[in-house]
Length: 503
Image (cartoon, rainbow, N blue to C red):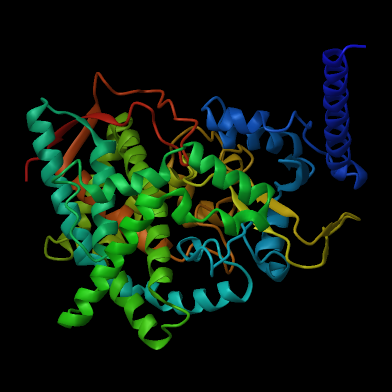
């Protein structure tokens, strides 16, 4: 036999061995749920779904909805993520059990972060165990009603600037306005002023560096894939792939921004009623634990959670107002009526009193759920699913497909219909409380939900008060969503005909 022939034979043999090993490994890995007599989604070739997700051919919510439809009558089922078993929980009773009663057994999110080596990822969402308890206890006082009320003027100033931009765009383009871009820039201004303590002028300058840097973290890219892949498959390797390595420019920008803001305030004894000032107070009490990197990490997660999500929610609700002029006028009349009780002004108390405005936004959060799923990781050594003989082991990931539940006709009849009537006190009392969780629930409930609701209500109410929104020739009536986006985002934006109301 020739040397080349021997080499070819060895190569074929090696490939065969590798394929056999891989097949054996995944055969064992993908038998996990079957051995526990738990129904499971059909295993697929590794990384096929991942490719579809990051290429925009499949959204994660679509993938999870397949499982939900398969398991909803059974209450739960299993699937695999990079060969790792994940429990899909579909029953509101079991969701309530895990998030509230058995929280100690599902304390953490399914991510691994090394706070010492990767402090910019050590935000409240990512950290685990005792560190989470400590960080949550320090941050909770910064989101009380009183602290949120103090930030109202900062948000209102950004809303007024947004109104000016909408008015200018409407005048310049004969009433045809793409609202999503403006709303994104508005949200960036809110985050800049409240979370980083600066006026970043994103509404005035579409090319502002602050918004550009933030968008880089939210764009689906190969770098996002690398981080997600390592956190999902090799948690122990996460410490070697940090935020500063994945997003070097963005990390440096936000770190320098926070550092310079804090330094300026300390040196000039400047005080401002915003999130930065509250974090500085925490740092003064415990600067070893709550150092400047940790402050930056909290501000960055504020940006990630508050940019796309808030902008899209206001946009979706304005779109629905354009489709339902009667509802829009009812909302407008409520706003004017409540304002009359407060001398014609929109203030913190007035916004809280706008019931229909609140219900419209609640319905928007249901129909267009910002984060379509909740994730938890089992932290107890073992956990037996109530009413079954299924026992889970420590480290098992749990996923709750909230968007699928929000669109289930069992809990929300005619789920594709936009109906704020679903959120009257009478109707809510007839529905399982854990069938609607736009901000999560339990001890890991979104800490900034009060601020998010304030921003949503104030922005939406002020826009509807000042402008009338109608369907435009450019309006995408079907609202085709970008499948590669982290939150529901229309590919064509929110094109609407905007007319200023007569005062």
